[in-house]
Image (cartoon, rainbow, N blue to C red; front, side, top):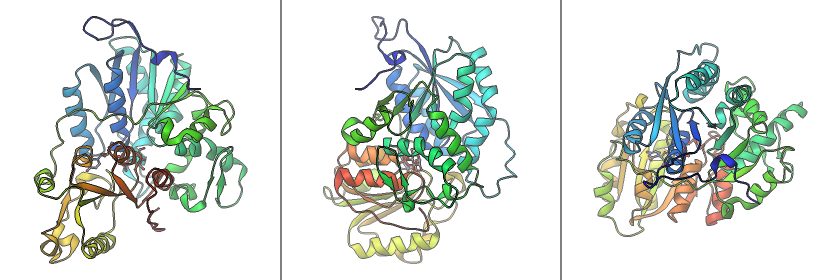
Amino acid sequence: MTHTPDILKPHKMAVSGKPLTGPHLVLIPSAGMGHLTPFSRLAASLSDLCHVTMVSILPTVSSAESSHLSDFFSSYPDVHSFKFELPPFDSSAYPNADPFFLRFEGINQSAPDLMTRLLTKSSKPVSALIIDITLSTSMVPLAKSFGIPCYILFTASAAMLSFCAYFPTYYDSNSGPIGDIQINGLRMVPVATIPQALHNPKLIFTPLFIQNGKNLSKADGILVNTCESLEKDTLVALRDAHVQPGFPPVVAVGPLLPVNIPAISGASEVSPWLDMQPEKSVVYVSFGSRAAMPKEQIRELGLGLEASGCQFLWVVKTTVVDSHDNTELEELLGEGFLERVKDRGLVVKGWVEQEELLQHKAVGSFVSHCGWNSVTEAALHGVRMLAWPRLGDQRINAGISSNIYTNYTLVNNKNC
Ligand SMILES: O=c1ccn([C@@H]2O[C@H](COP(=O)(O)OP(=O)(O)O[C@H]3O[C@H](CO)[C@@H](O)[C@H](O)[C@H]3O)[C@@H](O)[C@H]2O)c(=O)[nH]1
């Protein structure tokens, strides 16, 4: 049975529809559009029910996050903004680490300072926190020490949640290299599906992932951006504490619906081009907000799209952080490519409004890395997916998306 935490139950409304009484919820996203997007969506929908504050941790890692935050707060004035300037973080111990993972660690280290400021400077006493999973290492115990209920918004699938919850138990009892993992009460996760970073305990990501997983059980509840019809068995197993004894209530709050904000300035030629294409003819190819592809692979993919004979819209991304991406398309794709495909393919770099274009009548399918937001957005608009999982949770998600659409999954051992 679904258990709704008291804090999320409806409160008395004013005639305007805005909450008269009720709790003050503070949402704390971490870094990356894959995490910020579902937090904004939840903040927007909760702001009709109670007083909502969303924390912006500045400076953002990517420019997409920075644009999104300013557009979001101007479009949703009922969501209060609380800015927190993150002190510089010494990353010399982690050479070549992913900038988003460094950010997760940086926020966790500054969490006591963030909490103190929130408690002393908020316009209204804080009733509860809703935090990102990547911050649970620090924020769950801190919230407990202040007697503030702390919920986690899990931005990935319930299947990934079950993996996060079970992995610390496996890790602590396993002495050799990581192998296939049988999650209690659920599926077996083959070794090739396990996030690649977890095979290396020295990476900044690994100890944080394990500690975050341990702290899941200590949270007051977990909200997941999924729905019963998509992942019922997993939700039931989590709620019945088969995966982890003493697991807190799990509420499926997804798929979280898009927010209505002006487009982030990006590839403006996309809409006019799509308008000219026949219905359901276009294959949309995109790998999310942070999965970079090596140049050789970009060229191979280009040749494959050319040989396929399909109409395509391809968003090319070469760097993890958007503002570092300075290479010209012509140089990336090889001489003559753009000219050869110009009658049926559009290749862009930079931000596209994915939510909008998945609804466009010309888009017929989606070659995706299976970031969870992309999976839920495609499901919402009934767009079929061809999965090419790249990293992290994406292979686990690809398994779920193949249940929805009975599609195909491309496998690439180097990148997963
Ligand atoms: O040009 C772009 C690129 C992305 N998006 C949007 O940005 C979000 C991207 O999220 P997602 O599809 O989940 O991909 P990632 O950015 O890769 O997300 C990270 O966060 C997800 C949620 O935790 C994980 O599932 C992913 O593996 C992880 O890489 C989605 O809402 C997209 O619609 C755009 O609108 N335009």
